[in-house]
Image (cartoon, one colour):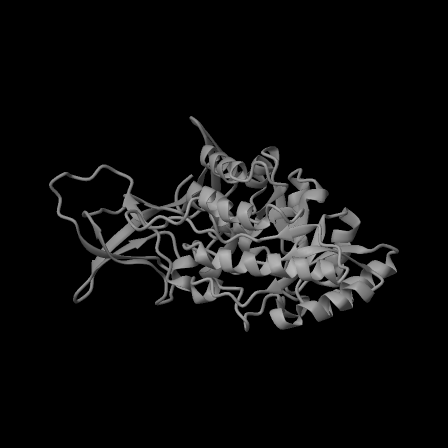
Amino acid sequence: MGTPVYIYSAATLTRHYRIFAQAFEGLNSMICYAVKANSNQAVLTLLAREGAGADVVSGGELQRALLAGIMPQRIVFTGVGKKECEIVQGLDAGILQFNCESEAELEMISRVAKSRGVRAPVALRVNPSVDAMTHEKISTGRAEDKFGIPWDRALDTYALAAKLPGIEVVGIDVHIGSQLVELNPFQQSFSKIAELIATLRQAGHKIIRADLGGGLGIPYQAGSDAPPLPSDYAEIVHRIMGKLDVQVIFEPGRLIVGNAGLLMTSVILSKYGQYHRFIVVDAAMNDLLRPAMYDAWHDILPMQKADAYAAQTPATIVGPVCESSDVFAKDRLLPPVEAGDKLAIFSAGAYGAVMASGYNTRPLVPEVLVRGSRFDVIRPRQTLDDLIAMDNVPKWLVG
């Protein structure tokens, strides 16, 4: 099979889902897995068998979820830029609800739904202006983030929704960011949402669902402070939302799949700059974008047993792509490695394969699902012929 290759553990995926779901026993809840984190059909099918619903952000993700056996009544459609054809797709499938993010989107959904003789179930995504204290590029709940409806326009937007003929207001939605490692932002956000639910009901709006999004972080670095446990997160939800008589929806993604996967890569060569040792591997930023995009940390370890007496020295691990940002790690302590040795890049199950590209005409790498002693290729390695065949040369350029 060769490298690079993504490898996922079915047992870990199942365990993470069950731990999260069990934390909300006794609460009227629904777990809608965030498909954007890892959308492989095998992963979706496994989670569907566990009872997961789906949070989708495109028509393509909706189709994936349905093909994997996730019931439409357990699918929520999120996203700041849904197209009319995607709204039609969701309406025709009979999904649970659209999470709407603007007045303009409300009017578009109403127009499309009315033209098809139906009313679209909608929850408005309200931006609570809470700083998630996470990375700038994955924070979504502040006043000027592109997501959601500003807090001070929430009541007016619900009033607009109530007047639109193609809209049925069913709830409220909030999501303040990703990879949160503290609980206080959740507590602030959920408390504000609970107060808003009471205000909306007094104004005559039917609020039967509260979609609380996802965002609970995972441990990426061994030895660092661990993020809060799902049980700690659930305690806040039970305490704040438990008496509101709403169905509570969650959209975990990274929490389920992040630490269930790794990217295995091979050493091509080692080289030395004036001050640094570089280990060049055959994986690159087009295979795993997070380090280049977010300066994200991933633990990286050799997969072969090292000489117990070998000195560990700092190394910068880089890929072969012609970009200075093609760096997986800087100044990591590693033993000597040789060409052909394997390295494991951990915590790569979320936002890894789904963000990959064919940059530098590098074919997409395979994905493998492991269960006990067996493994299955759940996406084959793309060939160069497959990649190049996606291009079409106009006839006027031929000959």
